[in-house]
Image (cartoon, rainbow, N blue to C red; front, side, top):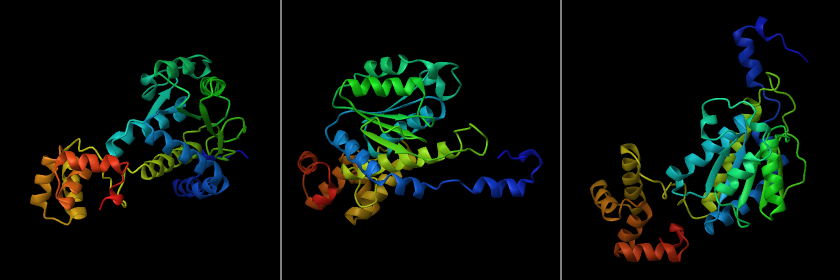
Length: 276
């Protein structure tokens, strides 16, 4: 049904755009088993230090690029790699025709040294984008685990997640409902996989990389709270531990040296909860 939006009041437009066809909880409920499989596959590759690729064109590609770029500062991990049709410049501008290439995605994956131990997550709301689908098909033929996130699942890959959006408010504008649901989904999958890989303690970001003043302060606050010590002592621990939050906490609680703390964390697969 066509909508006469240009003659609709702003108040009514807000109401209309707030009323989504499908909620994120619907997506999760409808794809629960497939989402769990994807999280398990991601966790396995984080632990084994393999690679996980997000690959897509346009909005889908940008969402994968954003997700992968945010993992390192939050969790100190380089497992996730984003690839977009048209290359990095497509993050800020449209690269016309790039999504129609059936070879570009395959070339990008090969340039990143893809192996059979890796995982390729294709994001294509239509499920038909040549750049994305050809990369997934090539990966599958080479025994690489594959996942497709789309609005209409084709059930041809190892994991298939169906968003279920049938019509955007602005027809064809997949940056809207499809994009929002994709962002939520990627965020949940990567975060839970990081939790399952020992990158957090309770709900603290203990693998966070202190890349600026704000994050340095947050790191010291975390050490103080978890180790139950004052901020001055926490700051000293932060510096003595090479600015490594988990190491600082283990050093203090176990009363051991930096190297012994590092070894203890490694022996426990990075899980702080197994040590303190």
